[in-house]
Length: 237
Image (cartoon, rainbow, N blue to C red; front, side):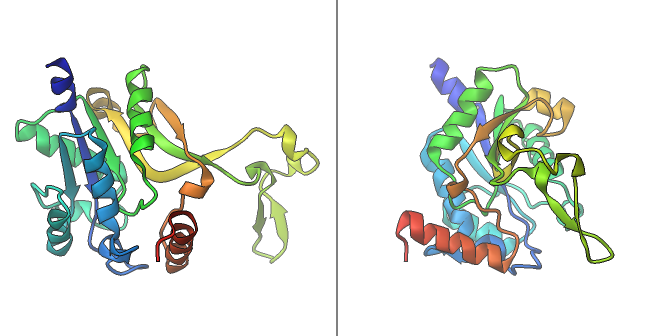
């Protein structure tokens, strides 16, 4: 019975607005034979970690696709939270607050991106376990940069190359600390603390993923690269 109560205390929220400009209809564009959002919905449902899998969207078309693949769409996201400048935390908090007002409060919640076809049940489970075994507010997916960021270059206004960190020009790569970036897959939060701190980056634990399972999808080139990764790792046509 205790495990049943814990299981019912978890919700997945998938944010999927309809106004993508660089990749039109990105969140429901076909990827490996199904709308890309379906990959996130299916993994979340199959994980057994969630009592509910909810999609937050402003688009009736996305809502329809989400429901077809087994997600709930209990509300439509307001326009003021659906533009290019809306932060992920604002969307996540809105969903949790809407659910609380509807009488559904959760101990843990996980925001899952709709364009994360390489998401796995195992990484979601690792995230929840890490959060539960800690005093952290959140735990989210990260991957290591393939090259030391301290050796990064930029192109100046004069067209010449310059280093971001010139003090490391002669530092050996192996002497520089590893750096990580947000993998853009999922964010677990301890809801009560998250609603106070209001940031997934506050007191956050890293869930390190292999680079081969991470690809941010913001442009058509990103999309094509993700499709090539899928074919190479999954054997999909």
